[in-house]
Each structure stands twice: as structure tokens, then as C-alpha cells.
Length: 530
Ligand SMILES: Cc1cc2nc3c(=O)[nH]c(=O)nc-3n(C[C@H](O)[C@H](O)[C@H](O)COP(=O)(O)OP(=O)(O)OC[C@H]3O[C@@H](n4cnc5c(N)ncnc54)[C@H](O)[C@@H]3O)c2cc1C
Image (tube, rainbow, N blue to C red):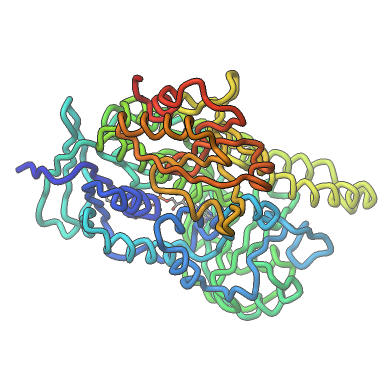
């Protein structure tokens, strides 16, 4: 029998599905979250959380809890390092220094195993009365008609089936998504034809060896034999547990390969190893050809999957959740148009395509070209000059990764712009970009003045303009708060007197001048007809 359960059914309660459930639950949307496993899987992936991801945790009320769940003490640092040849060899530089872009976000970045992050999310979702969580159930099918969707679930212990009826369904069920497949959403894949191994192991000897790199938690070893594919080490805790991923020959199994020898060669020294986990995956990049099919959406790894190069996976997935959550809520609460839901695909898919092309694939290609063209045994001087240049290039990469929705149909920006993961970090308020933090004249950070709906930030704003916005929002039912301030340094840095900030803290519209029509701006921002 069909149960008329919810507004939104989410299949997959990993980090992205649970994040989306929190986003919806905080907005009072009746949500059912379906997850097959009663506890998070103990694989230490998805460790690197950007400053932006921690902003989501702040918005979900669990930043403090996230930081408390960290497994490497804060004093130790969470930096990265790239080495050449072996990890303990002569050449290395700092890598992925996210602290370089810290001033442009409200919160610090963080690093912890994904299962700890998931535990924090699971605790939070329990507290939201409008969210029901069904652990131990597997989504098997999804069907849609004009009025809604039906999601069929099977109990994992083999006894029982349920059919949930809702207005929308979202597949957050990982890279092998059943929901994506049942919805008929195809994927485009770029296959690198590489088998990768993921090892989790204990070693105090490796901790001793790497004391030479204080404050580092992840290490990437480039080796000419591997043609740009990485040998990647990461701390799971301080002093004991590690993970490692790297290419292995086709046909490698748990039993036919010397993993200890591989680790020793990558480090360039012998050390104790006690394996906890050996797993394999194929290195490929897959992007769904659409993130929406009618009433069915996909998010996180269900929509995009790729090798963990640069730590983009979980961060991109959280941003999907934050983007989709307010839009579904707006539609269900009657203040968002249907094209607002289309904008989820129009904003998030090009960001991933750009992330894959301009950062992930590019890093493999550029490492490959470097390893082919430079070798300290052949020409030490040329190698060292290029190695130094790469060290500064690693800084530029962190700055350039700034996903933005310039050119999105729901952003009132410049014509001809396009949505991309490539951008810059700056204080200037630019339509389509993430709002940078600034101190207001009362000493609060602007992020402490933003509401869960839209916020119009106005520096010494004209009364007529403010009234026009307030009246238009009221007529259209759009939740809008106005954050008034005297201006000064913040206004100078933003280079704007008026900034309309979306519920996900991206900028819809920014201007020094009053708008021609506040109503038109709000209509565009919410995908509504005027
Ligand atoms: C070795 C490794 C290291 C990584 N390191 C990083 C990193 O440093 N930074 C980073 O950003 N990303 C990293 N990633 C990627 C990151 O782990 C993923 O992007 C992230 O897990 C995606 O989250 P998700 O919720 O979309 O999918 P998943 O984590 O796959 O979660 C999907 C959930 O859905 C459930 N599920 C699946 N099918 C069903 C079904 N039919 N019914 C009910 N439940 C279902 C699963 O049990 C699971 O809980 C790494 C990945 C690997 C493999």
C-alpha cells in the first residue's frame, strides 16, 4: 500500500543525503530520509572539508560538533605536501594551502574522516521534527506522475516493503545510484582505465618518519612511472592510522600483490604496517547528463563521481545539498517557480563539469607532462626551476577554485557570463558569486546578520528602495530580511550599496545604484513570473 508520507523522500543517507535532510528539515519541509546502513561505513574517505563546507555546518547549527569530532589535534595542523620520487626524498612543496583563501569565508576549513562527519550529521538530523529517518531500508525503485513520486523500499533484512508517496524524490545514493538509473538519467564518463587501491593501515613507524613535516596531514608522491596518477597518503588520526590510494596493475587482488613493498617504495623507507582495509575502485570521472528528471533529482556522488584528487567530492556534494534544499523548500512553500528547480541543474552541473575539467583532469595532465619533461637525473637545474614554479602554481590553484553561478538564469548579473568552478577570491560583491565576510559597523560579521531566506544588505540604503523590496517580497511571499548598516569599510570592500543574498549565501544582485524594479529582481531570483 502507498503511504502518503512526505514532501520530499531522499534515498541515501550518506553525507549529502543527510545534509540535504537537515537543510529541508530546518525549513520545516516534511522529509523522509532512507538509508540502508544503520551506522556510517568506517572507510576514512572524504576528509578534506573546505571553508565553504564548514559554512554549511555553521548554517546547520553543528560547526562546533564537527570540530569536536576531529581526530587529529587542532594544534597539529591539516596541511598538504607534494613530493617527488619518494615521500622522504629531496623534493617537496606545500600543497592545497586552503588557508590562503581563509579571509573570503566565514569559517575555517576542517579535516576528519567522513564517518565522523556523518555521525555529526546523523545526530543533528535526529533533532529535526519534520524529518523521519528510516535506517535499514533500501530504495529499489522510483516512479513519477503529474502529481508526485512513488519510492519503493525493501527492508535490508529481507522482510518487508514500503511504498512512499511524496511530491519530490532525491537520489543521494552514491555513484552507483539506483534512483539515477530508475529515473532514466544517463551519465557521461571519462574512463582512465586505471585500477586504484585504497589501503587503510596502522603504522607508528610512518608517523616517526614523517615528523620531518610537522603540521602536514596529507601527502602526494609524484613518480615518473605512474604518468601523473598519484600515490596519496593521509593521516586518519595522529600517530597511528593512515590511508593510501594509488594505481595498481590490472587484475590486482588482495592476495596477489605486495602492498607493503608498494608502500615502502612510495615512502622511500621501511616501516611497520598492519592493514585494516584493502579495497579497489576504477579511476573514472562520471557526470550525470541531467541532475533533474521531472520530480526526481540527484545530488552528490549520484550526480558526479571522480577520483579523490584535490578533495572535491564531498565538498561539491554538500554544495549540491545547500543549493537544492532552499529551492525545493521555495517551491513547496509556494514562493518559488518551477524554473527555480531547473536552476539546480543549470547551476550545479556546469560547476562540476568545470571542476572535473579545470582542476581534476588538469592536475593529472599537468603532473604527467611535468614527469615526462623534467627529471633531476637528466637535468637537475631545469628540474629544480620547474619544481619551484610548481610550488607557486599550487597556490594559484587554491585561489582559482571558486565555484560561481555567474550567468545563471536566476542571477541578475552581466550578460555573457557562464557558470563555472573557476573564479577568483575577492571581497567585491559580484552577482553569482559567494558572499565574502565583512565586519559591519556594529562589530558583527555580515554572516551573523543573514537570514535563512533572502537578505537585502543595504549600506545607508535609500528608504524608498527598502520599502519597495519589502513590499514586493510581501506580495510574492518571498522571505526577505533587510540588514541595514552605515556603510564604511564593508561597503567600500563590497563596492556595492545594495546586495541581495540568497538563502545559500550566494549573491543574486549587487549594485551601488537603486534597482529599476525590486519586484523584477525578486521574480528572477525565485524563478517566478512577475
Ligand atoms: C579514498 C577516497 C578518499 C576521498 N577523499 C575525499 C576528500 O578528501 N574530500 C572530498 O571532498 N571527497 C573525498 N572523497 C569523495 C567522497 O567520499 C564522496 O564524494 C562522498 O562520499 C559523496 O557523498 P554522497 O553522500 O554523495 O555519497 P556516498 O558517500 O556514497 O553515500 C551514499 C549513501 O547512500 C546509501 N545508499 C546507496 N544506495 C542506496 C539505496 N538504494 N537505498 C538506500 N541507501 C542507499 C549508502 O549506504 C550511503 O550511505 C574520497 C573518496 C574516496 C573513495
